Image (cartoon, rainbow, N blue to C red; front, side, top):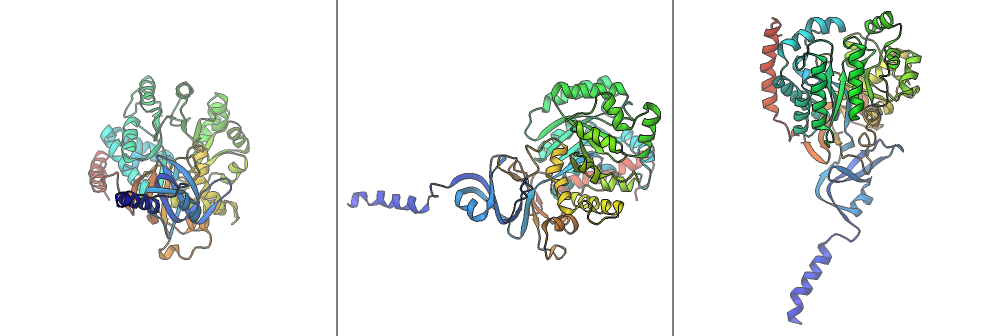
Length: 466
C-alpha cells in the first residue's frame, strides 16, 4: 500500500482544490457590485457579477449564480460600486481639447470664423492632433467614456492614438469645402479617407467613418461624394445637422428646404448616418430622420454655451429617432464630461417644457449607454451588459458624501454622481484605468505637452494666455 500513497494523496489534493466540474474558466470576474445592465428587461443586480472571456461578456447575473459557475484568472472586487456599461460619447472632436476655452462667449458663427478656423489653419499638424487626442482620451477615460465618435483632421493619427490607449472609437475624417490642415481639396480628402478606411476597417476597436462637416461647409457634390465613399466601404457617416438657426435660415433661403429635408432630397440620409445636434428640426424633419434610421446626438453643454438652442429630445425620442448624448469638443463645452451632459440633458428638457417629468433619469442613462449605441448603429456590440457583447464596463464608487444615500440608481447617476467617481474602466476585457490610475496613457507627459501647445496657440493668434 505504501507504494500508492503518493498517488492517492495527489488525487485527494486535486479533488479538494480543483474547481467543480460545472465551473468554467474565464479571464475576468467582476464581483459583488450593483450591476446595472441597461438590457431590454432593465435588470439590476444588487449583488451582481460579470464574467468576461477575451474581449466579450460571457455571463451577467446574481453573485451566487455567477460565482458558482465561473472561475477567473483575475477577480475585480466591485463592492460599494455601481458596475455598468461604459458611457458612449456620441459626438466629439478629441484633438480640439488643445483649444479648450478658445473664443468663449461667442456665437457659433463667430466662434468658428474668428477663432477656431484660424487657430486650426495655423496650428493643426499630425503631432498636434496626436497630443490633443491623447489629452481628450485621458479626460474621457477618467470620466468613464469607453466609446467616442470623433470628427476631425488627420484621423488616421487619431485612430492610432485611440488604439494605443485601448479605447473604442467611431472616427470620422472631415470633409470641408476649403483647404483643411490635412487635405487641401476634396479629391485629396477622398483619396486620404479611402486609404484611411482600408487601413482600419475590421479593427476590433476602431471603426473608420466619413465625416462631411455640415451642409453649410460642404457643397451638394461634396456631400454626395462623401456619402458614396461611405456606401462603397459600408462605413458610418457623421455630420453636424441643424445645429443653429443660421444654418436653418440659409438652407431655406438657398434650397427652399430645412437642412434635414435638403439632405433627404439629395439622398444623403440613411441607417448609416449619425447626426450631431438636431436642434432646429421640425416634426416633419423628425419623421424623415426616423424613417431613414438616422441616429441623433444631443450636446446640451455646447448648445447652451453657444446659444444654439435646445434640441427637442423628447419629441425626437417619441418620433422613434435613436437619441444619444455627446460632449462636442472641449473647445465649445469646455470639457468632455458625460456625467455633466446627463445632468444638463435632463434639466434642459424639464425647463424647456416646464415639466419635471420630461426626460426622466432612466431615459438619460439610456441615452449615454444603449440608446447612444443605437444612435451610432452599434447596439449589437456595445451599450449594455449582456452575454456576447463587448466587455466595456465601468465601476463607479458610491461612498462619497455627495453619493450617499442612494435610493434610485438612475437618479443618482444623472443628478448626483460625478466623472471623478469613476474608479476603474474596462474596454474589450482590458483594464485601462484601475482605481483612478491610468494604465495605457502617460498622464504627466500629456499634460506637459498640452501646456506647451497652449503657448503656441496663444502666440499664433496674438492672444495672451489667461
